[in-house]
Image (cartoon, rainbow, N blue to C red; front, side, top):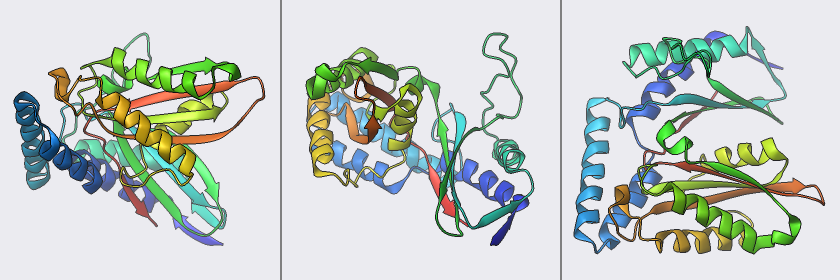
Length: 279
């Protein structure tokens, strides 16, 4: 059994909060730069140039890529041979508290969804935990802005709707979102499970690198097909037209009930932020 002190988790989460908000992942930068080279529309070219300039300034000066520094989603992959000394939930929240304070990041969380009083420190984190074999602890911090989160949708389709129903729902969700989620977007899709599991899969899909297709060729082909269909909508960067509406479509799936076909679409703006450390 390997012991990990909760203080180390706090320190790691604090650093990841700042890094994730200020440095865009390399694969996302690569997709944006590829889109700029392939974009024929002058207005779209100009917007992509500004996006590239913006994330360059953010990284060089350690300032947020976007003013919406998001609700802090924290994914923990916990090895079953790991023992954490201390309260893991409080350790994560203290890390968010420190990171958002030390990084001068905007605090965007309200304590109650209806009474709307800000917590003042961006806690609590949205915490997702999975148990795996081994003695490692993997921590991913993914700040999620709500301009894109608000455009996400879930549908409990009928099995008879089949793959065409899934395609239509994904496309409709992105089309109705239009310019609101600050395209070009990354589209996370969860298929299967239950109502809640489909949403989790869609969120989790956004954590996968955009240059890593689904391991299942069937779903990899569906990802490529949907990316093409979405980019044919002509919404373009920031909604001003062009061929770059999405940078990637990532799909995750799992078994489901014979009577159901849950599908969730979690949209992320071009600032698809996440940073991972393994302890």
